[in-house]
Image 1 (cartoon, helix red, strand yellow):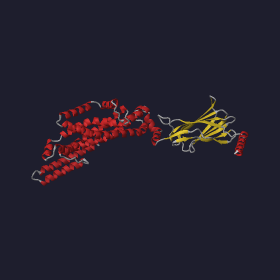
Image 2 (image 1 turned 120 degrees about the vertical axis):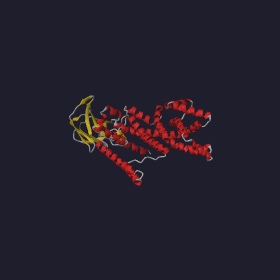
Image 3 (image 1 turned 90 degrees about the vertical axis):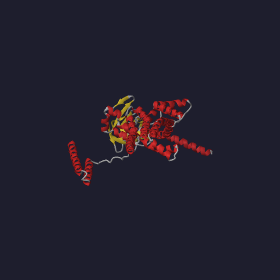
Image 4 (image 1 turned 60 degrees about the vertical axis):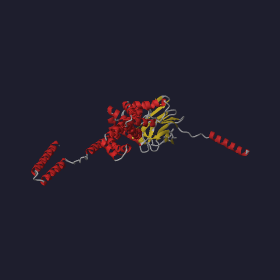
Length: 471
């Protein structure tokens, strides 16, 4: 054991002596700085694939002089048409301006700087490369390259300090592409358009607003079905002859419909916790929406039930059905059919009212939009939020119109009118019908029918002449 220890000790001493006698090979440049400017608004992130500014600095070591420096960017980096290089040489705090030439190699993503007078020891070289995109990766990257000593020897540069890169999403890349488009730049040069319809903000705000939009839909899709049984129950209470039940339903509908939903939200979110009742914000939001909509659904169902003719009740009772059977088997199915358009309108109103929940911190469409506006100082996210509301409300408004027309036609015992492709088809059909009627019964005034058909043809000719002139 002692012999082994003595052998290791002798080896260590020999190696120490050799290291002391043999001069260590060193670099002529000491690279101490490599940074990238953040290219994502509102954060300090450096996005890959998005142009930014890279700053690289090194100091010439003692006894050395440098005539050329080549910076090589990580694989996957890219130059743009606007890429340019700025070189600064400092001696202490004084700025030195040596003559130099700069060349860029877009294929290799490298920048080459050649000095007419070599840099001397102690001088700091700073190279700033503008509008260069680092690789779109998630992690750290480094710059490499080479330099040439005054004696002509080329030496590889050690890797620079690491630069942390965040992978840019396709949305961010699209935003950056839009920023470079002349048409978009011209559009944004108009203050009103830039403030309310900024193309870059429209694209960048959509991903976050989609989340808020889905949350708003979820709130109304949970709250509205819950409001239907509430409204139906209170509608029965209003219809029944019990004064107590009628009074309870009247107070509920009167108070809820007579006070703003905004006030009801405040009472629920700030009043219930004072009573020791604490619920999840989204659960409480669904309950408030259902409680508010239930009052309106009560009146909708009550009016629908009372619109059914009394003969329906009498006919059902004559068939031996009791009151409950009559209500749920005869009256309610007809009522639902009649109130579907009004219920759809109430759904639209409730969906828009979810925006009021932003006042109490419930994350939905409006609160997401307000957050983006606060970060950007631009009103465009509110316009995008309005479009998300319209995506739901406009089709539903169209559906309500169709349902109301069909309901009116069914009540009148008619059917939907057949659309004519053109005016000629309608006039010709009328003329043919009149002519056929006249030919089938000449004794009953066939000549009059023929004259009427001729009058229809004349009217069609005049109408066609007017259309031609209008064109």
